[in-house]
Image (cartoon, rainbow, N blue to C red; front, side):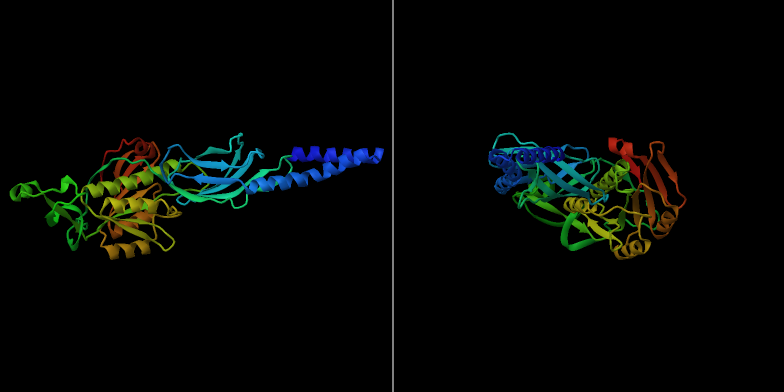
Length: 390
């Protein structure tokens, strides 16, 4: 555009000089047209821009590394076919990283066209995408023209890779088994305890059918599972995003979140209800997990909560959570070891630490007051970790 303006300015100067040199009506008309042309071009472009419609379609979910794109559909009159400039502001709520995405579109002659803008999914988290500006240029390529009413705000959650891990409990003497008592008024997911027996209904899983009773009475009978009320196990998230400017911590963040989700699912498979604890603006965010639906809600939440900037947790806030939920066993998933904080946590609960470290760190060792297991981020990403003693 700068080049076009320079060329146009030179042309106007020559037109005016030609009129001054010749003092003819034709030269005056050329000079007047040259001077008035930008205004006419801008008015025409603004009229077409007002009749242009831009629609956006953003996927709501993806997995780390998956190729996804924001689809931009443009419908506009044929007379204006100049390029379009779109600018988006993107932010990952988990890592805090912000990015401005500039997009240049060059539509063809079709009245409606769709473009795909690729998005970065290298790091998990909840991404918020907002349209900062949308415009085009006039037919002469001299002036910016904004599209009136063009707006967009959307979000996509990028989940960590799902890995399958089995847990071998290594509980200290102060830790109690989750599910020691059950809610008498609410059904749950713990099939080791029967909540009630009832007739089969449409939509019930055949896995719930009690076949012996069904054969005895001639009708399908369903066994409802009970809801544990003792949430003594806590999963504590402790990942760090660094500066938030893409400083190479994506692998560690992805591995911490993948391991957190894997441990939560492993506990659910064993019928062990638990809590997931993360830092938030008020000190601690706590979610109870005793069903797959609550697990999915938890993942959406923890991928939106900003990562930690210091030690694993506000110890006073965690102590309040520990007391309120009767926590006696804590599984900390971290990418940074803070010895003083770990010693303090070990003094509160039976503590197991999963440290996502460098490739050279493998295996487990005794941290003195807690069980410390080192796992390379690459091993988590490749799914090589199958069993953990926690």
